[in-house]
Amino acid sequence: MLERIRLESLHEKVTTAENAVKMIKDGMTIGSSGFTKAGDSKAILPALAERGKTEDLKVTLMTGASLGHGTDGKLAEANVLKKRMPFQVDPTLRNKINNGEILFIDQHLSESAELLHTKNLQSIDVAVIEAAYIERDGSIVPTTSVGNSVTFAALAKKIIIEINTEVPEEVYGIHDIYQAEDYPYRNVIPIVAPWNKIGRKSIPVDPNKIEAIVFTNLKDSPADIAEPDEKTTAIAKHLLEFFENEVRLGRLTDRLLPLQAGIGKVANAVLTGFKDSNFYDLTMFSEVLQDSTFDLIDSGKLSFASASSITVSKECYERVLGNLSKYKEKFVLRPQNISNTPGLIRRLGVIAINTAIEFDIYGNVNSTHIGGTNIMNGIGGSGDFARNAYLSIFVTQAASKGNNISHVLPMVSHTDHTEHDVDILVTDVGLADLRGLAPRERAQKIIDNCVHPDYKEELQSYFDRACERGGHTPHLLEEAFSWHLRFSETGSMKQATAMEVSN
Image (cartoon, rainbow, N blue to C red; front, top):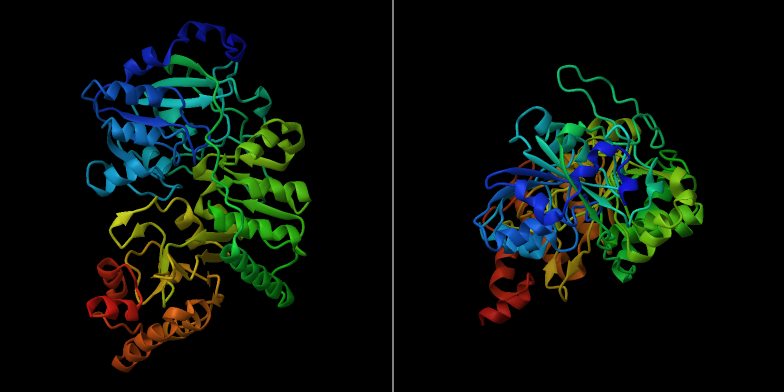
């Protein structure tokens, strides 16, 4: 295993996770690799959770995005976390956040590293970074994600490296490590196409800061991949028909523009739909590469993909990591403040497809909170892409839970993306193209095309009565959240169900 430490002076730093974690003290800020369950800490953070069971220990934890193997939940259960940022998906951690036991900062994923470099966040005491191996100059070859690791390595006072021997050394070359200059000396980031590589293949590290090296041998947590169902297939069909029409109108070509898709079954279904379409030579400029990405590469539809992590199923993990020579020239992994940087998204003309929890009749989107109060996961990169994309698309089912929840409402209970940043809304019922429409026109388009039949009449009534009262963006404030309140009281947003319960 020492062959994976090519700087021989670091051999003496090899130790156990239990020994290495002792350098983490109460009150410290930890920066850990890991982006959507890929390339995360598999030894040090779990060992920290074990310490927390017997010690009074509180830390602030920053990562790229979510962690795998239930690590966030273990840390939360052990009461180790004081504050967490910028993203999470763990149910145990989520409950503690919503109960007020752990503080959570929900950030745009492009911003965390920037805020560290500008000293607007607390400094990093210890960085924990997963690596495939360490180069002769002490630099780190990352594994399946880059995330914020470049910034953590540069700014941390001390570094712990986890060398994961499960990851083949052939990953060398799939990363493009580029760090933009600090303000006010920042230059143009010279990427004009998704396949442009502008940096080095490993993360530069001052070897003197490396305090411990721990070996692990564990795959990333597999992504939960759901097969396309009736609703996600319908959403994909509406979107593909929209893209085909954009080509007929001369706004796009059969190659489209670089695609971005959020994580989850809807995004996977939409991307999978491209396999049987007339589009070809597609590219991606996204943040996460999922199973559908590599399925499209295998089908010949996708020629290149750029992101910050690979988050795939067990089968796809083995297919890609076991055949890197086949895929190596087809994708690249970058730091997330490059993969998600607004200027590049705008320059490349990205088509952004993200998931909404709910949206309202004017096009405001809630992608983070249930009932306006309880956070689900976080905004992730959807805001980075939505505001800067050539096309900003949000998708969701029209209704769920036996159609007792409508995902199209008079007013969203929490706003992550304002109507100004939303171009296209899609449900399994249909698609609303909101470009060039005033608020009243947007509302009617959404009601006509996106609302589940069980809620269409009531939503139309709400809008008509609001228009009678007047205003540029007509609302009945006394009724705007009545659907949410109805659900909390009766278990259904349906007016008829609420009346039955009250009687």
